[in-house]
Image (cartoon, rainbow, N blue to C red; front, top):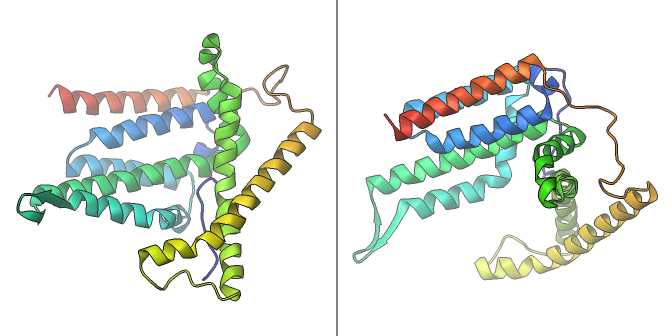
Length: 261
């Protein structure tokens, strides 16, 4: 088994226009992009969304292979989504209809676009900037005692540790294979049982990393949001405002076309 190349949660350093944008703008862009993916309903609409994603990746100067690599862990989920929407169970047994095929293609394409759009956000935004952006967007919720800072920190740490845990899984699997473990032969139940020697050390490693991270944060006197200041203050630029306005306008036009026209 070769090395696991997972880009989910990783940051691709750069100095492009998208890299320099305010993280709050990119977060709002991503939310509007997700809404847009679920609003479009025809080939022309999906082609426009794909073109928007391709232009954004080109402006961010991201290698296409690096961006598409994020789909590798999602292949099973995409195929499963396609099959679940393709097959229809009725009184006559299992059937495959044209409507089912259309729904299967639509749902699979939506899932792929959502993964690529979210990946574009994490590749062009550093974990620290992403934390600050999420916290600033959720700051109004502090009026109802919502832990905005803690939630933003947990979300960012979870994203950051995805590649680490995947690499750890790869190392444990290679170690188990060198000791005679077999993860590929047998039926589905046998393969599930074979994963037990893999899951136990993986959970132990994850808890150990979490404990080490907690001790490191306490050693640096981390006490949550109380009394914290930011070295870099977030501020919207004209590019952020113009881009966000264009994104809101585009989403509104698609919504009007979907529900009104």
